[in-house]
Image 1 (tube, rainbow, N blue to C red):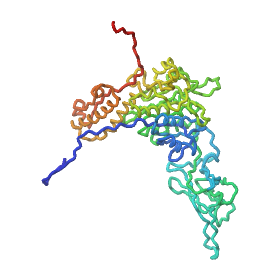
Image 2 (image 1 turned 120 degrees about the vertical axis):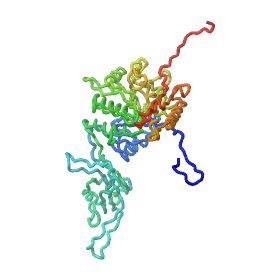
Image 3 (image 1 turned 45 degrees about the vertical axis):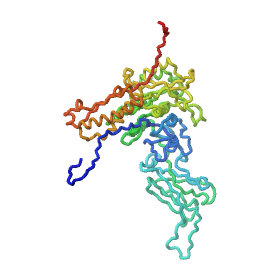
Image 4 (image 1 turned 90 degrees about the vertical axis):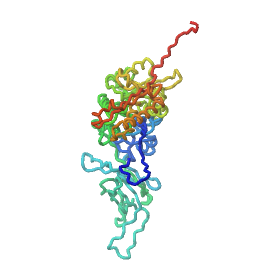
Length: 571
């Protein structure tokens, strides 16, 4: 209200007395960590990049014109593609490398950038320059400010020297001359003018490009042009990014790279710094385990870290879930077999989970691995971890039915088969342990179905047994947290209490009408308490406002039981 009224008249004041609606947050954004074919454009190694389509993934994490997959069968591209195929939308991707740890470095001619002539013939090959320090030289990798870029622009012959005779003629500009500009992050580093592809050029007219660029601190250049005149071998004008050699971690350093740092937003920990990411997976954790680059204890350490990060979202409520993959069985000492998920039987995954011995309502696991078409092997089937496809089904269910619907009894898209076909008796072993099965119901003409919806919580903690219940409560908590920020520093009185109750109550009533809460009426489905019984003078003196919220979430009908008997109507 206005503080003073001095002149007679009509005064209109705007007063905000209504409740502010709470908008539900998105719980359908995924985070992926793994190996990619390339890292280019705005993407950076070890740092999360937002992706909205499979084409955009190829733009940032594949070589130009590539299908997006890798020659060493990394699982990340299959997981991201499975995410989009099954209805996933926005996701964040962190590449932890383009080669497996300990791999051989590619030859120099396969790195850098090859420039072509205007006739699409080879001209120059640029690469990042090595320093003189370290054994074999350390590559001058681009900093976070930007990658090294090389621009080819028009030029002309050198101007005549000052002591040239007055009747001296200017050299003829044949069009073969060009300038190289080396830049990083939009800042010019070096510039070389009056260049030509002619190695026998008169230095008073121009400079041979290879000789001139030898003085560069950043790049090297090699003449890869074919025979012909200097003009026909001249590189086409344009801006080019010099691709650095792939980062290849040593097996000892790789676990640290995979873990990363939250402050730098790198590695697995960095993906948890993206607030909107609500589900996380690291499919290539199985890739490095299969190749013997990490042992089972190290794999368990990474899984434990991801679960702990999901459980700890201070200062807000925990709302993320991690989807884990069951490791394949290692061959025996006297067996010369590759590590393959085909060897993993239901009793093997049950034994492994007992060894892992980590329970959490913020984790989920699916079994078995799935078969997908491998474009790098003429479309032949390949076994991959199911995490990406399953998270896509989570997102699809959220969009089609709601977050309260269990993401089960759904058909996984892009899947041609299973590593093992679990039957009902075998699932009786796995389901009580929280291992969700993907099963083949060919006998019922129903195809493949996701046939489980449980978290990895302790079996006796039935309150948080189901994925849909855990995600629904997280959705409610996070939405209320963000939607009631306006309450902070408001006068803590009964008017505020009523406004908060209306705000939260209206939000929960919408959920009840959508079918997310159980009850014949809103009073049976939820309650919101904010009054003097929980907000005492002592708590108000401490600047605190307490609001109690109770909800009754719907739970999936996991066991459908029909009780059938004979009935005689006359008895």
